[in-house]
Image: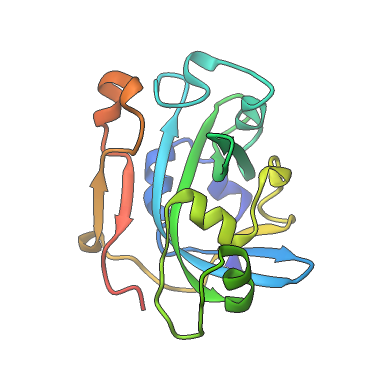
Length: 197
């Protein structure tokens, strides 16, 4: 796998990057072993103008401070006090863009995924990790990873040569952001609906 470079994460087009992350491989390097999965669903959040973003109107809090760091960091926050949600911070410092990873297909480390998710996994099964909470849990990601360097840290993202055809990508409204008004209608959620392979 060829890791994504810092220049990839520093791009300012967070919506375009959310599309480009489809098909990429995410790895978690934890004491019990390495787990890999292929990203199949993402959502873009483009602050400061995006009302759905935690950093809308450049709102800086203890939770959102990671979003204002230079791209190439993990932004992990707790949702409803239960779910640990993993985001990729993009763009230059002080431009708080982030991409939520909503779904992935396990590639390796099935025994670790099964133990964390409490769901049986066997090599060769295509059982998507659907939903950002399930994804993070199965990959062993939690708020302790907030701010993690995505090039040198315990979470890494790269390409293994798989290409995602434009015809296989569906752009949809984001989920659970009715409070965002007109921004809730933006087609900034991307789902790979093709032959995952």
